[in-house]
Structures are given as structure tokens and as C-alpha cells.
Image (tube, rainbow, N blue to C red; front, side, top):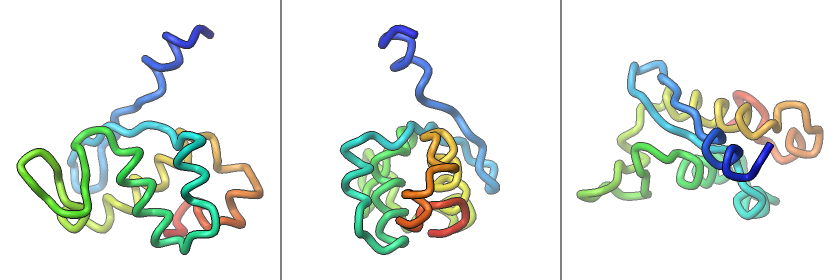
Length: 105
């Protein structure tokens, strides 16, 4: 696969339990390093802020961003699980130890 194809195909649109649509991307090496030695809730926050492409998220809402507190809790759980899946991290033992396995946010 060429890099241009990889970049084009790495994002996915998902429909969360609320019915809202989100576009997500895999966890990058940079974000993965940020997740190390963090509490699972902090890992979830980092993953959501860096891996949800649409709508753009921030800790506090503004004209251009949806605030994390505005996302339904069920959607947040769903999104973290989908980010783990799209990143190919479901089966990696080291990430289980970090607490970012499915359902553990």
C-alpha cells in the first residue's frame, strides 16, 4: 500500500449509540506515547481529543469545537472502543496493561 492510500483510508465514519455520526482516526505514535502511564480516564480523554476528526473536539466548547462534556457518555465509550479497534490495538497485550482495552475507560 502506498502512503497516499494509507492516509486516505485511515479514517472511518462511525454512528454512535445516540445516532450521531463521528469521523475517527487511529492512534498515532505521538498520541500513543502520550497515553503511557496515564489513568484510563485520562487516556480516554486524550484519545477522544486527538482521534475524533469530526466533529472537532476540545475540552471546552466554542464556535468551532464540540466540548467533551457535550458528548453523550455512551458515545464516548463507543468512540474509545472504535478508536482502539481502528488502531489495531485490541490484541496487543501491552496496551491492555495501559488500560485502553475495549470498555475500560
